[in-house]
Image (cartoon, rainbow, N blue to C red; front, side, top):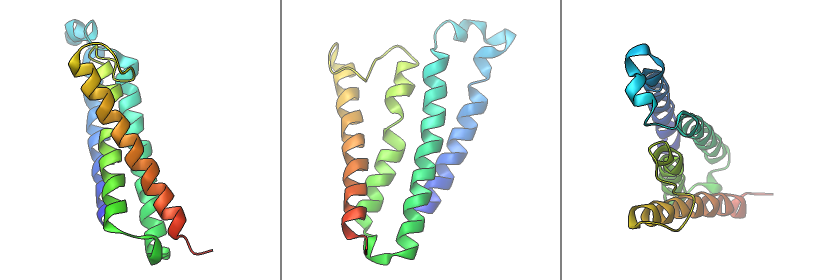
Length: 133
């Protein structure tokens, strides 16, 4: 239930974010267009959608094979689903969280991104480990 609700919420947020991405493209949004990286923001939008679909998939697996379900696994997917796209989002505003270097803000962002990747991978390893074959 948590994963399905969170996935639906992520799709809503990503949809609203997609609409907001149109602002810099408007004639009156010219000043903002010069300050943002539109490709990075598009990657954020798409990543939130893809991670929402991943959570729908995990929710389906949990409903069909209850032995695979655990609250910790679900929360790891929720955390990863929201946090994993953030490096793209902040890259849109000039901070490269894909590189563990530079100023402290960049290093903190890269560390948090690494935690989200670890959470998603760990959750899927746990799901597959518990999967009844």
